[in-house]
Length: 252
Image 1 (cartoon, rainbow, N blue to C red):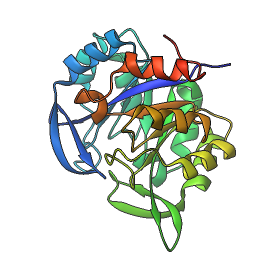
Image 2 (cartoon, rainbow, N blue to C red; image 1 turned 90 degrees about the vertical axis):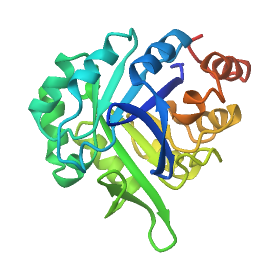
Image 3 (cartoon, helix red, strand yellow; image 1 turned 30 degrees about the vertical axis):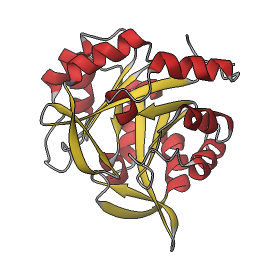
């Protein structure tokens, strides 16, 4: 049985790690290089770095900062933000990223997923999906850092992204992000049932039990969180011991 992964996320703005609630009200959470080193020491399975303003500011990801973070890591490192072309991916992979996360550009031109998967291999292409539940239309996908509705259903888009060559999906519930009320189990479970690639659940982690639920009930392959790690509310060793004690396979 494959082990479940615990993944801290560095949301980076202006060179600093930040965290908000439902993508708003950002507050400073520290230096991304120092946090990366800390999480690697604590036993994180992977690390995700998202330059959260790159797309809206129409610029490339902060390559120099990515390089500095990568120097601190001996675990897989995924980088996203402002990626829209083969050259963007090449630059990040050359500067220490193991995988890249694409979001808005893939929604704007889905064939980009096919192109990147053919060029670099599906194993290093992660498609990030920001979804919000609406009473009228259910779970819908949003783009441009969660500011624009796309009219696409979340499960439908996840299935298309996987079919086009995404090696992994990073599913974030905007409705749950930063609330610490637990992951979005329903939509996460629906996506996990619809695709054959790994699904990373994101948005809403607040307690140890939330990770147990997203693995056991929704079938996620990994759990991603930010503020509970950044502000010391949950420790990665503590979380992994909890999961192990509950029969969930993790790398200790």
